Structure formats: C-alpha cells, structure tokens
Image (tube, rainbow, N blue to C red; front, side):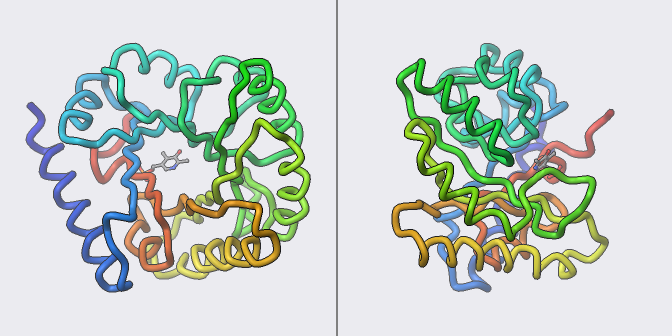
Length: 230
Ligand SMILES: *Cc1c(COP(=O)(O)O)cnc(C)c1O
C-alpha cells in the first residue's frame, strides 16, 4: 500500500474542487488524467484501484508494455509526441490521442483507422506560447488545419490540447490557457460541425489556473506519484 498515493490523490482532488468552485464550475465535469510515465506498474494499479481510470502515457513503447499489466476498463490516452511509424501499434488501444500536431500524422491515423474500420478520437495540440522546444501547431494555423482534418472520415476531432511553458508562478501562464479556451470558442462559432468538447490543459505546476480557465482534462503526474526519476 502506498498511503502517500491516496493522500496525494485526495489533495489533488480537493485542489481541483476548490479551483472549480472559484470558477463557478462543477468539478464533476473535469477529468483527472493520471500521467503514469516512469511510474511502476504496482503504483499504477493502486491508483486505478482508487478509482482513477483515465491514464496518460507519453511514449508508445511504455504504453504498450503497461497495457497488458493492468486490468481492463482503463482509458489509456496518448499524450506525447507521436511518430507516424508508431500509429499502427496503438490503434484501438487508446481512447484519445492528445497530440495530433501535423498533417502527415493525420493522414497516417486516417489510413490505419480506415483499415480497422474505426473512428479515432483526437485532440489537436497547439503550441500557444510558440516555444521552439514544444510540439504543436501555432494557434494561427489551427483553423485551417481543422478544416482539412474534417475531410478525414476516420478521425474525430474532440478538442484541443496544450502544454504551457514551465514557469515559477502559474499565474504567468493564465493567458496561455485563456487563449486555448478562446480558440476553441472561435472554432465552435465558425464551424458547428467541429466538436470542441475537451480542453486538455493543466499539469502539476499549473492545473488550478487551467481549471479556472476552462480545462476539462487535467494531465497530472508528479503531484500524484511524486517526482519522476530519469
Ligand atoms: C509528463 C507530462 C504531464 C504531467 O506532468 P506533471 O508535471 O508531472 O504533472 C502532462 N502532459 C504531458 C504531455 C506530459 O508529458
């Protein structure tokens, strides 16, 4: 038993609930996606046992190793940069891909999904702050990209994702989250056919600000499992 894990989870849930309350939102509408990269399988089993069934991994290999080691009923989600040659191996194994960031990847997902006769739910990753070190489309290109992706019948865009810059004071990234929220609103207004159900934003360092700015999927690792060892 990792009692720290249970305590950490309760603390995170409490902080989410308070942030939701400040924003006049219902905390039930916010999914806590536990980011399990570099986390041992027995700890992942334990958090699943505590009721957290949405788990995120950022590397395909690690994801594929872990899936068979956990009970069925987990919603595995791919949150990291995705190479085209890895797409095939995750088809049907993840409930959401958070990191669609380029046309060549969209084409590959479409091809693999069509062969399997399935529709793959995705989020478009946006590099709101324009950081060189991060993946994601520039905000200015998202609308055009989406209008092209809607022609791919086996891909269902469900929303947007961003990774905010790391800052000491999370208040500093509020404009980043607000910009993603505004972009989703703009997309909805311009094209009613494109679904903007999910805003995946907010991590350990900044999730409360993200909740205040409309996030409904929080990707949280170290606040739950402690610092990662690389
Ligand atoms: C690792 C990771 C997270 C979680 O990071 P923490 O700061 O540990 O909460 C969230 N999103 C992505 C894409 C990640 O790779």
